[in-house]
Length: 195
Image (cartoon, rainbow, N blue to C red; front, side):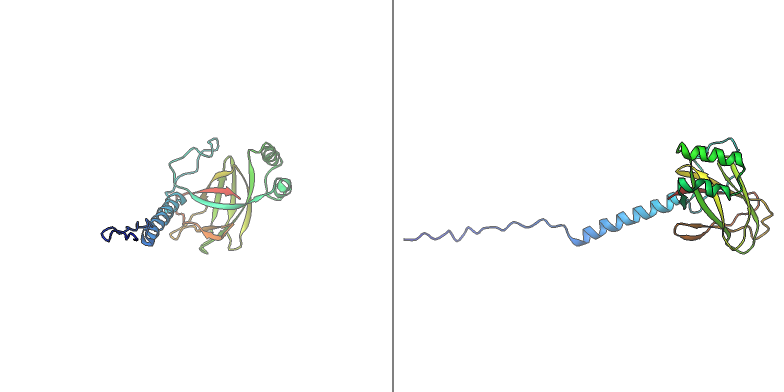
């Protein structure tokens, strides 16, 4: 005789614990939203204006100020002397900057500046203790700036901006970028990242 299994007993199949695709999509969407919000927050969009820091102040003195982050092209250390020779710095400034590069305290970046609105104007660009004054034109003018890995650069209108203001722009590693328009008494804070 053969034994038959009890008909009342049936093997129960275990349900697989697979996460639903909807749940995974929601997690990915929430992560992207969080990262995008953090990017807007830390990029300094809509930042406030402030005055130029004193010449003796350090580059990170005003940590509460909102700054716009821009990525600029790094000038190779072996080409630093050549870039500085045509940049308009005095011989003493060039020697000090080259010494900082050799100590690896400083890096040189090329910062092309142009008139983004067509209104023209003159601005002073302050980076640490160096100040460069430039008349804005539609054609980018390349400024050579000594910065740390991420240096603070302040832009202040020198000429009367008038009612329309002065609209400068910079050419970053990702292309031209128009900066917020500056009016009388304004300054624009940038965090320049050397790439």
